[in-house]
Image 1 (cartoon, rainbow, N blue to C red):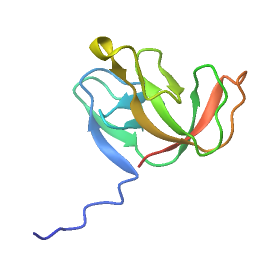
Image 2: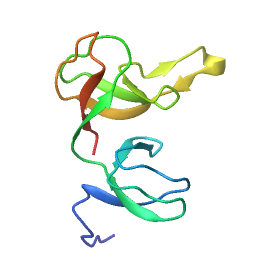
Image 3: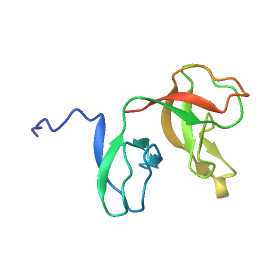
Image 4: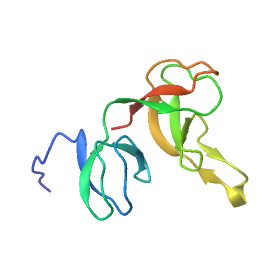
Length: 115
């Protein structure tokens, strides 16, 4: 197999199935991206998949370097990989890691995306 260079991969083209606002977190199933612009439903726009972003966090302290996940229901970053019992288990989406410590009372955390 051969490969041909396509792009750096810091920003990807993303076709939105529903409208997305600039700065909105977008689930890609096994990771997340952050919209770099408003994207209308059915249109293609830019999605950041590399970088450090300030995001809302769930309760609890986070240490720098801690693995973090996107809770799509609460729309917040958490250190919890999954919740619920096996029959109703919900897997949160890997987001990356905390790029700085965040105290329990902090409302946001800096997240280094998985990339």
